[in-house]
Length: 158
Image: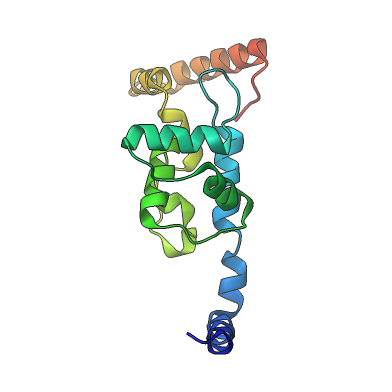
């Protein structure tokens, strides 16, 4: 396609999309950045784009995504990944692929991303399942114990 025609079409799409297009720009990057900030490796350190790409590729047994592309998505330099990329990223971070979309476009009632990320940990999930069905009084005591443990270990409250 001729460059002038492409530019004209692009401007037309931007005019049609209007405010919605500008409002959604950066949504993927901000959500991905949030996952990078809140998800830690086994060593307690945040993942790098290279860590994420390597883990995704190892799990798939093939090259699915490159570290540079992960970084570009995270920083907003690229903002239109394929479904395969979104699926791989969502599996890595333990969130549904819909996490990367605007909530207004999705059904309400989905598990919040912070909860989904926490439930990836087998021990956290086990504690949550064991707490189900306990009285409000007992749950309040458990909450207090967890708050004390987090304070002792210097872990910020979520």
